[in-house]
Amino acid sequence: MLGRTADGVSWMFRLLERAENTARLLETGFRLALTRGQGAARSEWQSVLVTIGQLETYRAAHGEVTGPHATDWILRGRDNPGSVLRMVEQARSNARAVRTALTREVWEATNEAWMVLSEMLARPVKPNSLGDVLAAIRRQSTLVRGSMDGTMLRNDIFNFARIGTFIERADNTARILDVKYYVLLPSVSLVGSSFDNAQWDTVLRSVSAERAYRWLNAGEIDPRGIADFLILDSRFPRSLASCYTKLESNIAGLARQYGTHVGCHDLVADQVRKLQTATIESIIDFGLHEFIGQFLASNRRVGNAIAADYRFTD
Image 1: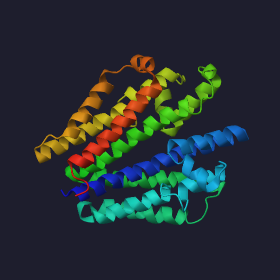
Image 2: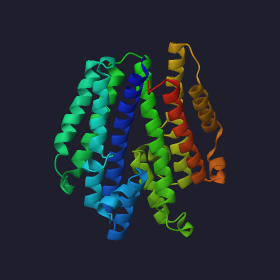
Image 3: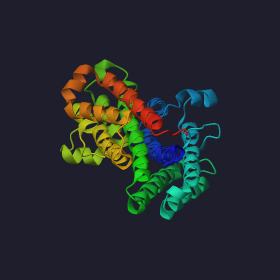
């Protein structure tokens, strides 16, 4: 496969995953903002902007963080290159560029996602319709992923699509863990308090893990248990361990097909070993913030190495 085709497929699915993750974050922020005072609601919207790395660009455009402005900026801001609308547009452009590498079903699902969301986001979203818009973003992304899973050959194209998905998903889960707990928690004295527990509940909601976690843990909110679940429990598809187990499988698929072992394979294998041998006790002792920082840096290196080894820019 040409490097630019691999690049297009990988980033197509990274962008769709990022759009879906952003919708999940927005939904969590919106629900919490409805149940809290003005100051707490502003803090929640700010945390969403911090997590997706857009706080500074938002402030340059709007100044004070408010729910309506933050929502509009994240979903459809004209001057925001990282808006959901722009991400879906870029995913569609990538899909069109690699059209011959995709099945008809994958292309049609991607094109439909763009048309549906372009219409829904043509105007500012009213609060009473925000839930429907966010659900549509998640649904359209899922439809593309489902069409890929049900119609694509398990070849290099499929592997690059999955690689893009899991690199992006791991990045999202790690960022939420880091930002939600360490940026929003205002004082060490609040660790273990009801406020602290509420923040961990927010973490679960942000990655749609609340039901799965409560089902496994009899409904108890335990910060250590939640961190363990989202980092090390490979049963949950958005955990760091699960993302890297899947990533290793798809990287191995490329090695078998191309008959070569390149540097990015070793980086992925090393990260898998670290996650398999880690315990939540060792992570807490080391420092959760420090562990997540190292993971994010490693995840970026993996993404860059894959792009270099498979010549995405060729």
